[in-house]
Amino acid sequence: MPGDPFSGIWDSAVRAGIFHGPHPAYAVEFTDDEIDAALSHVGDADLILCGHVPSPLVQRTPLPGGGFALVVRGVGWTQGEPDGRGWTIDYCVLDHVGPARLGSIAWEVHRHIRDFRPRDPSWTTDRAAAFAR
Image 1 (cartoon, rainbow, N blue to C red):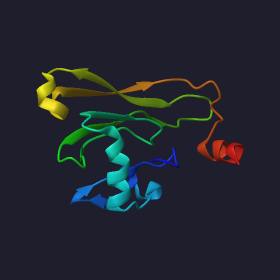
Image 2: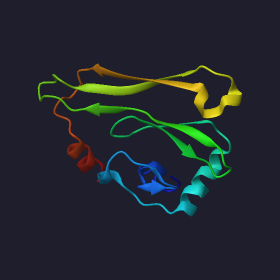
Image 3: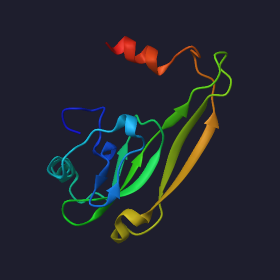
Image 4: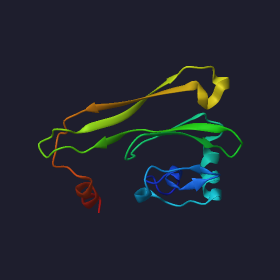
């Protein structure tokens, strides 16, 4: 969202009868006018990629011109044990499988969850937030 790179329009609750948002804790309420203004920058794109989200989310979103775009909110993770066991990364891989005239439905999305071991297993989101202040 312009002016706030850590907040997206898909954190909003409901727009045109469609739920937008993975979790109420991250909810930011934007007006329909603010959402239309932000989406006017993507033109008639059929795919919008987003990152830095608590968990992947794939959805279609209406565009101001009457079309739709497939929105893929990229990567999530789960925190494991303090010794580094049990952590997972959650990500999506996209394949363009149809002709461009199909727009947003020409994309195939594969979600994957893999184990990984962090460099610093003592890292927490609370620690990251304190560092940012």
